[in-house]
Length: 382
Image (cartoon, rainbow, N blue to C red; front, side, top):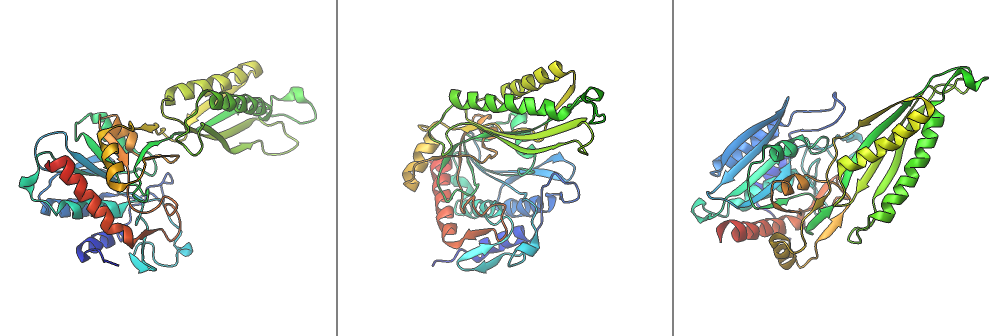
Protein backbone atom coordinates (compact mmCIF):
# COMPACT_ATOMS: atom_id res chain seq x y z
CA UNK A 1 0.00 0.00 0.00
CA UNK A 2 1.32 3.45 -0.93
CA UNK A 3 1.58 5.60 2.17
CA UNK A 4 0.43 9.23 2.36
CA UNK A 5 3.07 11.89 2.99
CA UNK A 6 4.39 12.38 6.54
CA UNK A 7 3.48 16.09 6.28
CA UNK A 8 -0.18 15.23 5.67
CA UNK A 9 -0.29 12.72 8.51
CA UNK A 10 1.28 15.25 10.86
CA UNK A 11 -1.44 17.76 10.00
CA UNK A 12 -4.17 15.17 10.59
CA UNK A 13 -2.51 14.11 13.84
CA UNK A 14 -2.44 17.69 15.17
CA UNK A 15 -6.07 18.28 14.20
CA UNK A 16 -7.19 15.08 15.95
CA UNK A 17 -5.14 16.00 19.03
CA UNK A 18 -6.90 19.39 19.28
CA UNK A 19 -10.38 18.82 20.77
CA UNK A 20 -13.20 20.87 19.26
CA UNK A 21 -16.39 19.21 20.46
CA UNK A 22 -19.67 20.90 19.55
CA UNK A 23 -22.57 19.96 21.80
CA UNK A 24 -25.91 21.36 22.94
CA UNK A 25 -24.84 20.52 26.51
CA UNK A 26 -22.89 23.57 27.64
CA UNK A 27 -20.54 21.59 29.88
CA UNK A 28 -19.33 19.53 26.90
CA UNK A 29 -19.19 22.29 24.28
CA UNK A 30 -15.75 23.61 23.29
CA UNK A 31 -14.22 26.43 21.31
CA UNK A 32 -12.93 25.51 17.85
CA UNK A 33 -10.45 28.41 17.80
CA UNK A 34 -7.32 26.26 18.38
CA UNK A 35 -8.21 24.18 15.31
CA UNK A 36 -8.90 27.32 13.27
CA UNK A 37 -5.53 28.77 14.30
CA UNK A 38 -3.69 25.60 13.25
CA UNK A 39 -5.34 25.68 9.84
CA UNK A 40 -4.75 29.43 9.45
CA UNK A 41 -1.01 29.02 10.07
CA UNK A 42 -0.68 26.17 7.57
CA UNK A 43 -2.73 27.92 4.89
CA UNK A 44 -0.98 31.26 5.37
CA UNK A 45 2.40 29.57 4.91
CA UNK A 46 1.05 28.11 1.64
CA UNK A 47 0.22 31.57 0.31
CA UNK A 48 -3.51 31.75 1.09
CA UNK A 49 -5.20 34.99 2.07
CA UNK A 50 -6.75 34.32 5.49
CA UNK A 51 -10.02 35.57 6.99
CA UNK A 52 -10.86 34.43 10.52
CA UNK A 53 -14.57 35.08 10.98
CA UNK A 54 -16.18 35.23 14.46
CA UNK A 55 -19.41 33.23 14.62
CA UNK A 56 -20.29 33.23 18.33
CA UNK A 57 -18.43 33.15 21.66
CA UNK A 58 -15.35 30.98 21.09
CA UNK A 59 -16.50 29.86 17.65
CA UNK A 60 -14.92 30.86 14.33
CA UNK A 61 -14.98 30.17 10.61
CA UNK A 62 -11.86 30.26 8.45
CA UNK A 63 -12.04 31.43 4.84
CA UNK A 64 -8.73 31.00 2.99
CA UNK A 65 -8.32 32.01 -0.67
CA UNK A 66 -5.54 31.38 -3.17
CA UNK A 67 -5.64 33.03 -6.57
CA UNK A 68 -7.58 35.89 -8.09
CA UNK A 69 -10.74 36.24 -10.14
CA UNK A 70 -14.18 34.74 -9.64
CA UNK A 71 -16.19 31.56 -10.13
CA UNK A 72 -13.60 29.31 -8.54
CA UNK A 73 -13.77 26.18 -6.40
CA UNK A 74 -14.63 25.87 -2.69
CA UNK A 75 -13.40 22.94 -0.62
CA UNK A 76 -15.27 23.01 2.67
CA UNK A 77 -15.19 21.07 5.92
CA UNK A 78 -16.35 21.55 9.49
CA UNK A 79 -13.87 21.77 12.34
CA UNK A 80 -16.07 20.42 15.14
CA UNK A 81 -16.77 16.87 16.26
CA UNK A 82 -19.48 15.21 18.29
CA UNK A 83 -18.76 14.27 21.93
CA UNK A 84 -17.25 10.86 22.64
CA UNK A 85 -16.96 8.36 25.48
CA UNK A 86 -13.30 7.35 25.51
CA UNK A 87 -14.10 4.26 27.60
CA UNK A 88 -15.75 2.78 24.50
CA UNK A 89 -12.69 3.38 22.32
CA UNK A 90 -9.86 0.87 21.87
CA UNK A 91 -7.40 3.75 21.57
CA UNK A 92 -7.21 7.40 22.63
CA UNK A 93 -9.82 9.28 20.51
CA UNK A 94 -7.57 12.36 20.57
CA UNK A 95 -4.49 10.54 19.27
CA UNK A 96 -4.24 9.50 15.63
CA UNK A 97 -3.63 5.75 15.77
CA UNK A 98 -2.75 3.48 12.85
CA UNK A 99 -4.20 -0.01 13.06
CA UNK A 100 -5.50 -2.54 10.50
CA UNK A 101 -4.85 -0.25 7.48
CA UNK A 102 -6.91 2.47 9.13
CA UNK A 103 -6.30 5.71 10.97
CA UNK A 104 -8.43 5.94 14.11
CA UNK A 105 -9.35 9.16 15.94
CA UNK A 106 -12.26 11.48 16.68
CA UNK A 107 -12.81 13.47 13.50
CA UNK A 108 -10.69 11.15 11.35
CA UNK A 109 -13.48 10.71 8.79
CA UNK A 110 -16.00 13.27 10.10
CA UNK A 111 -14.20 15.35 8.99
CA UNK A 112 -10.95 16.97 10.06
CA UNK A 113 -8.83 14.80 7.75
CA UNK A 114 -10.54 16.17 4.64
CA UNK A 115 -9.41 19.72 5.40
CA UNK A 116 -5.80 18.52 5.74
CA UNK A 117 -6.14 16.68 2.41
CA UNK A 118 -7.49 19.85 0.77
CA UNK A 119 -4.42 21.75 1.99
CA UNK A 120 -2.15 18.97 0.76
CA UNK A 121 -3.80 18.95 -2.69
CA UNK A 122 -3.46 22.74 -2.99
CA UNK A 123 0.30 22.50 -2.44
CA UNK A 124 0.69 20.77 -5.82
CA UNK A 125 0.01 24.08 -7.58
CA UNK A 126 1.86 27.38 -7.95
CA UNK A 127 -0.15 30.57 -7.29
CA UNK A 128 0.49 31.76 -10.86
CA UNK A 129 -1.35 28.70 -12.23
CA UNK A 130 -4.70 29.90 -10.89
CA UNK A 131 -7.12 31.51 -13.33
CA UNK A 132 -9.93 31.18 -10.79
CA UNK A 133 -9.55 31.17 -7.01
CA UNK A 134 -9.40 28.16 -4.72
CA UNK A 135 -11.14 28.78 -1.41
CA UNK A 136 -10.77 26.44 1.56
CA UNK A 137 -13.45 26.98 4.22
CA UNK A 138 -13.44 25.53 7.73
CA UNK A 139 -16.68 26.07 9.64
CA UNK A 140 -17.93 26.02 13.23
CA UNK A 141 -20.72 24.05 14.92
CA UNK A 142 -21.88 21.88 12.02
CA UNK A 143 -22.76 19.13 14.50
CA UNK A 144 -25.24 21.33 16.37
CA UNK A 145 -26.57 24.59 14.92
CA UNK A 146 -24.66 24.84 11.62
CA UNK A 147 -24.18 28.46 12.65
CA UNK A 148 -20.88 28.75 10.80
CA UNK A 149 -22.27 27.85 7.38
CA UNK A 150 -25.47 29.80 8.09
CA UNK A 151 -23.43 32.96 8.73
CA UNK A 152 -21.45 32.58 5.51
CA UNK A 153 -24.67 32.08 3.58
CA UNK A 154 -26.46 34.99 5.26
CA UNK A 155 -23.61 37.36 4.36
CA UNK A 156 -24.28 36.58 0.72
CA UNK A 157 -20.64 36.67 -0.36
CA UNK A 158 -19.78 35.09 -3.70
CA UNK A 159 -16.95 32.74 -2.76
CA UNK A 160 -17.03 30.39 -5.73
CA UNK A 161 -19.14 28.77 -8.41
CA UNK A 162 -18.44 25.17 -7.40
CA UNK A 163 -18.26 23.60 -3.95
CA UNK A 164 -17.18 20.24 -2.54
CA UNK A 165 -18.12 19.45 1.06
CA UNK A 166 -15.91 16.62 2.25
CA UNK A 167 -18.32 14.64 4.42
CA UNK A 168 -17.63 10.88 4.43
CA UNK A 169 -19.30 9.29 1.38
CA UNK A 170 -16.63 6.74 0.36
CA UNK A 171 -15.75 9.16 -2.45
CA UNK A 172 -19.21 8.82 -4.00
CA UNK A 173 -20.76 12.10 -5.17
CA UNK A 174 -23.92 13.06 -3.27
CA UNK A 175 -26.15 15.65 -4.92
CA UNK A 176 -29.27 15.42 -2.73
CA UNK A 177 -30.14 14.95 0.90
CA UNK A 178 -33.23 15.28 3.01
CA UNK A 179 -33.94 18.24 5.24
CA UNK A 180 -34.44 17.92 8.98
CA UNK A 181 -36.60 19.60 11.59
CA UNK A 182 -36.77 18.52 15.23
CA UNK A 183 -39.58 20.07 17.26
CA UNK A 184 -41.03 20.08 20.75
CA UNK A 185 -44.81 20.30 21.20
CA UNK A 186 -46.08 20.77 24.77
CA UNK A 187 -49.71 20.83 25.91
CA UNK A 188 -50.60 22.39 29.27
CA UNK A 189 -53.95 21.58 30.83
CA UNK A 190 -54.53 21.37 34.57
CA UNK A 191 -53.88 18.68 37.14
CA UNK A 192 -56.35 17.36 39.67
CA UNK A 193 -57.39 14.30 41.63
CA UNK A 194 -57.84 11.31 39.32
CA UNK A 195 -61.07 10.29 41.09
CA UNK A 196 -63.00 13.02 39.24
CA UNK A 197 -62.10 13.99 35.63
CA UNK A 198 -63.83 17.35 36.07
CA UNK A 199 -61.16 18.40 38.58
CA UNK A 200 -58.55 18.73 35.83
CA UNK A 201 -57.89 18.94 32.10
CA UNK A 202 -55.65 16.15 30.88
CA UNK A 203 -52.72 17.25 28.74
CA UNK A 204 -51.98 13.59 28.07
CA UNK A 205 -55.36 13.09 26.45
CA UNK A 206 -54.79 16.22 24.36
CA UNK A 207 -51.46 14.78 23.26
CA UNK A 208 -53.16 11.50 22.34
CA UNK A 209 -55.52 13.38 20.05
CA UNK A 210 -52.63 15.39 18.56
CA UNK A 211 -50.59 12.24 17.88
CA UNK A 212 -53.50 10.75 15.96
CA UNK A 213 -53.69 13.91 13.83
CA UNK A 214 -49.91 13.83 13.38
CA UNK A 215 -49.90 10.24 12.14
CA UNK A 216 -52.64 11.08 9.64
CA UNK A 217 -50.58 14.10 8.56
CA UNK A 218 -47.54 11.85 8.04
CA UNK A 219 -49.60 9.59 5.82
CA UNK A 220 -50.75 12.58 3.77
CA UNK A 221 -47.17 13.80 3.32
CA UNK A 222 -46.05 10.36 2.18
CA UNK A 223 -48.87 10.16 -0.34
CA UNK A 224 -48.13 13.64 -1.68
CA UNK A 225 -44.31 13.61 -1.81
CA UNK A 226 -42.05 10.88 -3.17
CA UNK A 227 -38.52 10.79 -4.59
CA UNK A 228 -37.31 7.37 -5.69
CA UNK A 229 -33.68 8.56 -5.74
CA UNK A 230 -33.73 8.13 -1.95
CA UNK A 231 -33.53 4.74 -0.24
CA UNK A 232 -36.49 5.86 1.88
CA UNK A 233 -38.40 7.60 -0.89
CA UNK A 234 -40.93 9.49 1.25
CA UNK A 235 -40.76 12.00 4.12
CA UNK A 236 -40.42 10.37 7.54
CA UNK A 237 -41.85 11.61 10.83
CA UNK A 238 -40.58 9.97 14.03
CA UNK A 239 -42.15 10.35 17.49
CA UNK A 240 -38.91 10.19 19.42
CA UNK A 241 -39.64 11.27 23.00
CA UNK A 242 -42.71 11.86 25.15
CA UNK A 243 -43.15 12.81 28.78
CA UNK A 244 -46.27 13.77 30.72
CA UNK A 245 -47.61 13.74 34.23
CA UNK A 246 -46.00 12.61 37.45
CA UNK A 247 -48.28 10.10 39.19
CA UNK A 248 -51.10 7.71 38.23
CA UNK A 249 -53.54 9.26 40.70
CA UNK A 250 -53.12 12.79 39.29
CA UNK A 251 -54.65 14.12 36.10
CA UNK A 252 -51.75 14.95 33.77
CA UNK A 253 -51.20 18.72 33.73
CA UNK A 254 -48.40 18.86 31.12
CA UNK A 255 -47.31 16.59 28.29
CA UNK A 256 -44.43 17.17 25.86
CA UNK A 257 -43.56 15.37 22.62
CA UNK A 258 -40.35 15.59 20.55
CA UNK A 259 -40.59 14.79 16.85
CA UNK A 260 -38.08 14.40 14.00
CA UNK A 261 -39.24 15.10 10.45
CA UNK A 262 -36.99 14.29 7.47
CA UNK A 263 -38.34 15.92 4.33
CA UNK A 264 -37.54 15.83 0.62
CA UNK A 265 -36.07 18.51 -1.64
CA UNK A 266 -38.80 20.88 -2.74
CA UNK A 267 -40.51 20.89 0.67
CA UNK A 268 -40.35 23.99 2.88
CA UNK A 269 -39.26 24.09 6.54
CA UNK A 270 -41.55 27.05 7.23
CA UNK A 271 -44.60 25.41 5.63
CA UNK A 272 -44.07 22.16 7.53
CA UNK A 273 -43.81 24.00 10.84
CA UNK A 274 -46.94 26.03 10.13
CA UNK A 275 -48.88 22.86 9.27
CA UNK A 276 -47.80 21.00 12.42
CA UNK A 277 -48.52 24.05 14.55
CA UNK A 278 -52.03 24.26 13.04
CA UNK A 279 -52.74 20.67 14.10
CA UNK A 280 -51.59 21.41 17.65
CA UNK A 281 -53.58 24.65 17.80
CA UNK A 282 -56.73 22.80 16.73
CA UNK A 283 -56.41 20.37 19.63
CA UNK A 284 -55.57 23.10 22.14
CA UNK A 285 -58.60 25.21 21.17
CA UNK A 286 -61.00 22.29 21.31
CA UNK A 287 -59.78 21.32 24.77
CA UNK A 288 -59.21 24.81 26.18
CA UNK A 289 -55.50 24.17 26.74
CA UNK A 290 -52.26 25.99 26.07
CA UNK A 291 -49.84 24.63 23.50
CA UNK A 292 -46.19 25.60 23.05
CA UNK A 293 -44.30 24.80 19.88
CA UNK A 294 -40.49 25.06 20.00
CA UNK A 295 -37.84 24.09 17.44
CA UNK A 296 -35.18 21.87 19.04
CA UNK A 297 -32.79 22.69 16.18
CA UNK A 298 -32.87 25.57 13.73
CA UNK A 299 -33.69 23.19 10.90
CA UNK A 300 -31.58 22.00 7.99
CA UNK A 301 -32.97 22.61 4.50
CA UNK A 302 -33.02 19.77 2.01
CA UNK A 303 -30.20 19.82 -0.54
CA UNK A 304 -30.59 19.43 -4.28
CA UNK A 305 -28.01 19.95 -7.03
CA UNK A 306 -29.16 19.28 -10.57
CA UNK A 307 -28.06 15.94 -11.97
CA UNK A 308 -26.91 17.72 -15.17
CA UNK A 309 -24.87 20.37 -13.37
CA UNK A 310 -21.31 20.78 -14.57
CA UNK A 311 -19.80 19.68 -11.25
CA UNK A 312 -21.98 16.59 -10.89
CA UNK A 313 -21.35 15.56 -14.50
CA UNK A 314 -17.59 15.93 -14.05
CA UNK A 315 -17.49 13.97 -10.79
CA UNK A 316 -19.58 11.12 -12.16
CA UNK A 317 -17.12 10.90 -15.05
CA UNK A 318 -13.90 10.94 -13.01
CA UNK A 319 -15.14 8.70 -10.18
CA UNK A 320 -17.10 6.34 -12.47
CA UNK A 321 -19.88 6.45 -9.86
CA UNK A 322 -23.45 7.66 -10.15
CA UNK A 323 -24.27 10.48 -7.74
CA UNK A 324 -26.44 9.51 -4.79
CA UNK A 325 -29.19 10.83 -2.52
CA UNK A 326 -28.84 10.37 1.26
CA UNK A 327 -30.86 10.92 4.42
CA UNK A 328 -28.26 12.67 6.60
CA UNK A 329 -27.96 16.45 6.63
CA UNK A 330 -24.96 18.62 5.71
CA UNK A 331 -24.00 22.26 5.18
CA UNK A 332 -24.58 21.87 1.42
CA UNK A 333 -27.93 23.72 1.19
CA UNK A 334 -26.30 26.85 2.60
CA UNK A 335 -23.73 26.82 -0.21
CA UNK A 336 -26.44 26.11 -2.79
CA UNK A 337 -28.26 29.17 -1.44
CA UNK A 338 -25.18 31.24 -2.38
CA UNK A 339 -25.45 30.09 -5.98
CA UNK A 340 -22.82 27.33 -5.81
CA UNK A 341 -23.09 24.02 -7.59
CA UNK A 342 -22.52 21.86 -4.52
CA UNK A 343 -21.64 18.18 -4.15
CA UNK A 344 -21.01 16.30 -0.91
CA UNK A 345 -18.09 13.90 -1.31
CA UNK A 346 -15.24 12.77 0.89
CA UNK A 347 -13.25 9.81 2.19
CA UNK A 348 -14.52 7.40 4.82
CA UNK A 349 -18.03 6.19 5.51
CA UNK A 350 -20.91 7.86 7.32
CA UNK A 351 -21.29 4.49 9.09
CA UNK A 352 -18.11 5.28 11.04
CA UNK A 353 -19.15 8.82 11.93
CA UNK A 354 -20.40 9.50 15.48
CA UNK A 355 -19.21 6.03 16.57
CA UNK A 356 -16.52 4.75 18.96
CA UNK A 357 -13.34 3.88 17.05
CA UNK A 358 -14.15 6.26 14.20
CA UNK A 359 -11.66 5.60 11.42
CA UNK A 360 -10.43 6.64 7.99
CA UNK A 361 -9.31 3.90 5.55
CA UNK A 362 -5.70 4.57 4.58
CA UNK A 363 -6.30 3.40 1.01
CA UNK A 364 -8.75 6.30 0.45
CA UNK A 365 -6.29 9.05 1.35
CA UNK A 366 -4.21 9.26 -1.83
CA UNK A 367 -7.25 8.82 -4.14
CA UNK A 368 -8.90 11.71 -2.30
CA UNK A 369 -5.88 13.95 -2.79
CA UNK A 370 -5.64 12.99 -6.46
CA UNK A 371 -9.34 13.72 -6.94
CA UNK A 372 -8.98 17.11 -5.25
CA UNK A 373 -5.97 17.91 -7.45
CA UNK A 374 -8.07 17.07 -10.52
CA UNK A 375 -10.85 19.35 -9.27
CA UNK A 376 -8.42 22.23 -8.63
CA UNK A 377 -6.87 21.78 -12.08
CA UNK A 378 -10.28 21.62 -13.77
CA UNK A 379 -12.09 24.45 -11.97
CA UNK A 380 -9.26 26.79 -10.93
CA UNK A 381 -6.46 26.40 -13.49
CA UNK A 382 -8.18 25.79 -16.83
